[in-house]
Amino acid sequence: MKGLRLILFLAAMMAVVPMAAADKLSELRQKADALHAGGKNDSALIVAREALDMATKSRNTTAIVGINSSMGVYLRTMGKTDEALRHYNEAMKLCTTAEFKAKADEDARQEAAALYLNLATLHIDMQHKKEAMYYAGLSVDWTQKCADKAFKAQMLSQNGLMFLMAGDNNKAADMLTRSYGYAMELGQTDAAMSAAAYMVATADRLGDRRGADMWRGRCRTLEPKVESTMTLVAYYQILCSIELNHENWRGALPLFKKILTIKGIEQMPFVVYDCYNNMHEAYARLGQWEQAYGAMTKAVALKDSLFESQKAESMRDLTVKYQAKEKELELAQKKAELAETRMYVSTGLLVVAVLAALTVVYIMRQRRRARMQAEEFRRLQADTDRRLMQKYVDGLENERERLARELHDGVCNSLYTVQLKIAAGNGDAAGQAAMLDDCREQVRRISHEMMPPEFSYADISMVLDDYLCQAAGAGQCEITYEAVPEDADWSRVADATALEIYRIAQEAVANAMKHSGATRIDVGMRLEGNSLSLTVSDNGQPQQHASAGIGRRTMRQRAAAINGQITTESEGGSTTVRLTISSLPEKKTRP
Image (tube, rainbow, N blue to C red; front, side, top):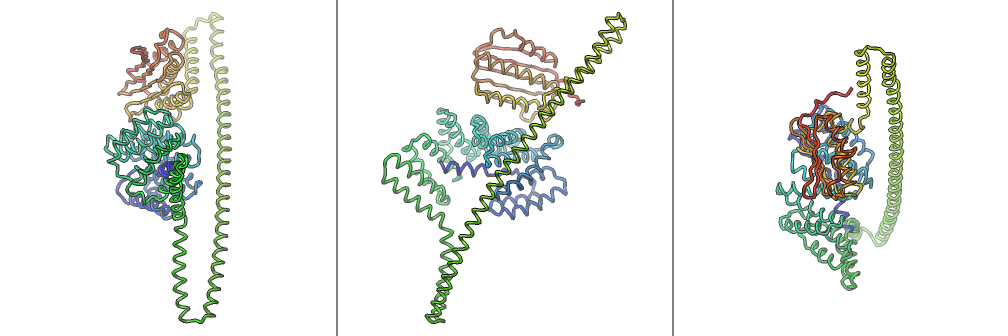
């Protein structure tokens, strides 16, 4: 349905800008945002550049990130995608530094979350769904670190919409459900209504009829308290879209009529046109030709009014000027002079017509040029991605060869020397022990260098969340993940410990998926003081010989290596594997 796409697009194009301190810099940012909201993007950019200069001189990193993010939104709205990307990249350079992540306060976390949401919106606008979901995921990561629940409700709703538009309905449901919970907790009726309305669409896409009915019920409860016309219109257009998709023409008609009775709907003529246009189709499908003709007549009349209003206004101005001139000529000139004037007017109209035709040609050329530029940008982006992937593969091959040389030239030769001494009956036990200790240290160093690359830029919670998302994407069962507390600093878990936790979680999840027949797996990780616990629960059948097998033995060995303990419990059709580490090893700087 065209109306639903319009509402979704308007919602997706909204930039989220966190609140800043009440100072001169904040006043400039608010002024720029107000100009953008009024459609004056050129003026908004001028004010934003002034704010950016001020933030740069004062070395206010958080403000620099936020202003570059906002400028990206202004430029994107103007169709200047390349310039928008340049500002987004400037902001990302700061957000991805270790110093920014370590020192990020509430304002910085909100700015980072808004930046990645704006990037996701840009990619949705360009139909790059995979990239949109990637940046939406980063936005959610930063949002989870924020303390402001109102901001969380807003961001989760917008990111949920990104996932919905990109086709990941499960992620969308998770984001929107959490947004609804925060909004209800804070008493924000309009925000709760928006999240619930989008959940109706999400549940319908998932084929969850019971869930869709539940969310409709919540919307009906909230509806009398909603103040925003746009929120109500979006809700009913979602319902209309669902009915039309299911070809329930009779059920869609009362919903369209409801939209037309909403207070303030007359200020949204494009929505009214969309209602009559779709009502015409519904009546026609039902064979009610008279009503279909009436709806079509109203839609056509409204369309003419919408698309001809500006032209009509210009013609009225021209008519007024012409009539005034004509009266003046009637008093001062003869009939011959009047005829000559009319000839001039006709010539002028012809010139106007020619200029109009030239304008149309120019607009068409500009659009064609824009399409060509967009295609060239996509081609260059694809080439860049291929080059980066080849560079990554080459780097992996070089690293493999280097590690092979290290093992051969270092460890193997040292072990051979020990072998020769033992074979020769050399009784220098202390010397041989020292050489074996040296071999062990070399192996430890090499194994440390073989840590998964994800751990070089992400903590254990982020790496585990990414793995579980990929596992859930296989479609075998539903997988949830919760890391508590929300503000936990997972980066303080040592790399070696994090790797063992990650491998234990992989083995436990894989066992549940392969052997238990589970339809749902819940993974949780908790950090309290210097202790950590990991739980993997499933609703499948208890696994046979749960204590046997290489995988189980390896999990116990990995747990013992990090001073942890593995337990397995089966109760009431649920199996839980629990890793408990009472004292985390101290994190050391990587060699």
